[in-house]
Every structure is written in C-alpha cells, then in structure tokens.
Image (cartoon, rainbow, N blue to C red):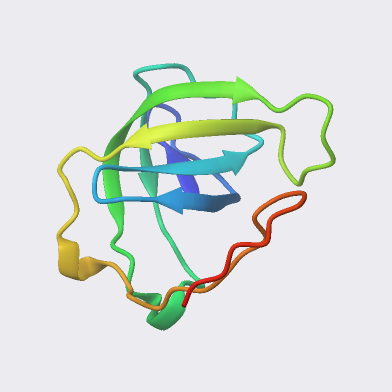
Length: 105
C-alpha cells in the first residue's frame, strides 16, 4: 500500500525489488520526482519488512507495451536507510527472463 503524503490518498502497489536504501514498486499512481510517500508492506516472509514513512520518489515512469498489473513503475529512496536486520533472509529463485538457466548452489 502506498500513501501519497500531499493528498492523503491510498493506492495498491506491488513491490518488485528492495534494498537498504530504497525500493521499486509498481502502482497506478503517477508520482513526480521529489514527491513524498508512506509505504506499508504486507505479505513478505514473516512480515519482516519495515514500514517506510516520508520516502522520496526518485523517478516514476509509465509502463508501456507490456501486460502488467499497474501503469507506473517508481524508484523510491527511504528517508533514512533501513536497518540490515529489518529484512528477511528467506531468498527464493524467481524467473530470470527468457533463456535464463542460472541456479543457486
């Protein structure tokens, strides 16, 4: 869930990538660089990801020509870096694209 701080509106979103410094989400929210958002992350293993408040939108682009759930992809930088222990260590293999045959050993 993402909340646009300047309007107080809430939108569904899907997280596709995260790190200690930021996150990539897709949503139907056309954000502008510099906008502030609050994020609530649910459904992660053990629900261990932190709530993220007043994070800054670094970029937002319309997703064109693909069959996707949402219309926009956004790179968001946390206001303060997340603590290393706040993130789950449950890794899983995801599809790596066409022709991907990499395995973790």
